[in-house]
Image 1: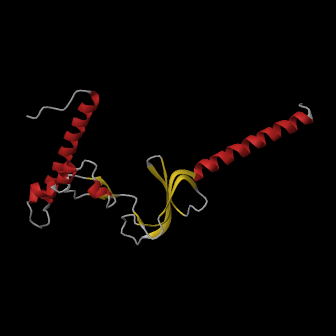
Image 2 (image 1 turned 135 degrees about the vertical axis):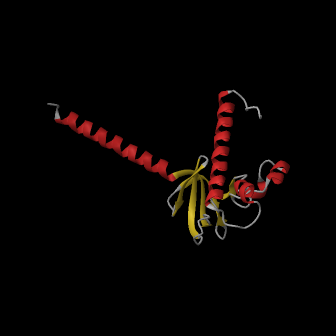
Image 3 (image 1 turned 180 degrees about the vertical axis):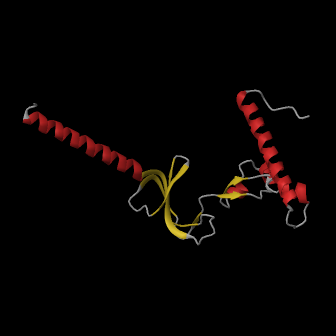
Length: 170
């Protein structure tokens, strides 16, 4: 059996350590690199924009919501401004713009953070440029086209990542 003074000291030490851990976790959770306050969030979902704060930690959006008690190294007041966390452009036709300016500023300034090139290629390849509904066979042909392209791309990436280099075209 431990002496009462030692037991009190151990309990006090454990309590202080627990308090410090909880405090550190709360501070880390509320501390961000960048905090954009009072913006009108336009998230691309089709829903109406809504007022909120947006916090960034590292290169990721950490949270969106009421962050009144949060702290950050950099705080931006977005009162009266739209904040768009990033849009995906599935119909990218900006190849020429990217050749001119590889930073993609023409799309970035509009909130687009991901370009998908060639999304319409399977449809154009199978159906041409006509605005028609595909038959089941044509739909299957488009799916096969995408599946084959994904397989080829994954093989190319694997070759480049393993040092084998790009595959020679036949």
